[in-house]
Length: 361
Ligand SMILES: NC(=O)c1ccc[n+]([C@@H]2O[C@H](COP(=O)([O-])OP(=O)(O)OC[C@H]3O[C@@H](n4cnc5c(N)ncnc54)[C@H](O)[C@@H]3O)[C@@H](O)[C@H]2O)c1
Ligand SMILES: [Zn+2]
Figure 1 (tube, rainbow, N blue to C red):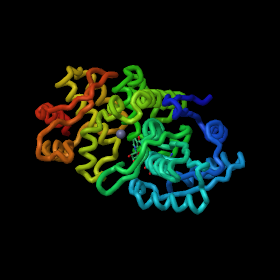
Figure 2 (figure 1 turned 90 degrees about the vertical axis):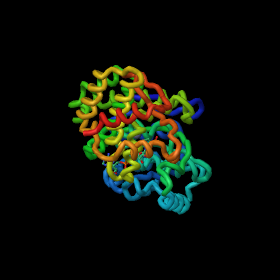
Figure 3 (figure 1 turned 90 degrees about the horizontal axis):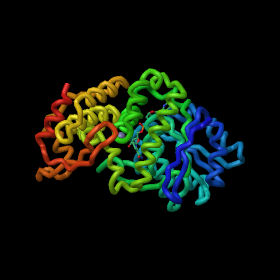
């Protein structure tokens, strides 16, 4: 039986359905929207594997269905790619009663999501995530965006999907290193909110890595519940939603210093979570035994817990963003214990440097 998690956002509420095939996708979509036309958007890796099956779900319901395929990769989250999608939507005469389906990872979801947010001032869209990162993170919460040369995810909108439909069987074709990266966000969810969930993820490494269905569906369901509870509380990230940035302060600095080519996002988050734990030890008496457990867990999913490049000054400058000359504060999500974190504006630079140094290989 499929699992359902509700994302409670008043009139913008929607369900996340976790299933082992695409059989119910069409019927679940028409329960929530009645699209006259659907365009399924997917990337060049995923479309050959799943496009036909997904399209058939809608064609069987006599819905006019089109497909649009873009080149896989972060580079496609661009304004020029977005324009190509608008051109395609005009060419098939998509109107305000049409819907988009994002079939793919976070890149597809962000790109198709923003196309849906902006085309004709907003049309409905459905997330059909196929990477673990998209299933537990990017498909939930309504953040959609493309990149601009001046910054990642800087052109975007909040636009909630009408439904998220995760078919866990698609993970069988996801490259192993991409799976590992998604697990960084899963581990993060446990640390910020749920000690029991963290223990489960820590203990079930083998079952999770071999995609054992029951265990995997508990993991995806657990993470979806944690993320959706946070999003329900603070849809627009004016407060508590920022706890989802646990591990991301150092991660963003490492990604930015390597021009987004040195680390996969989940790898950078792995190191960033360890740094945040060390900072927690200094600032909030976080238990070193828990740091060790977290490091073991990160490594057990083939993610790095250490790094070796860049001086502390370079890293801190990058963390401070544009405020290069004034030594202000840096925002960190710091653990107090597993399941409880605090959002701190840290001005204690020596504590930050110590934490970074302890992550060095
Ligand atoms: N909107 C949000 O809240 C949010 C949150 C986190 C991340 N993101 C964004 O998500 C993106 C990263 O997402 P991602 O890691 O899923 O990247 P991605 O979409 O590029 O997918 C990673 C790679 O795996 C391939 N792939 C995905 N599913 C597959 C499958 N089932 N079988 C075979 N290959 C498959 C893709 O083609 C791609 O090559 C970034 O752009 C990031 O900014 C958004
Ligand atoms: Zn992340």
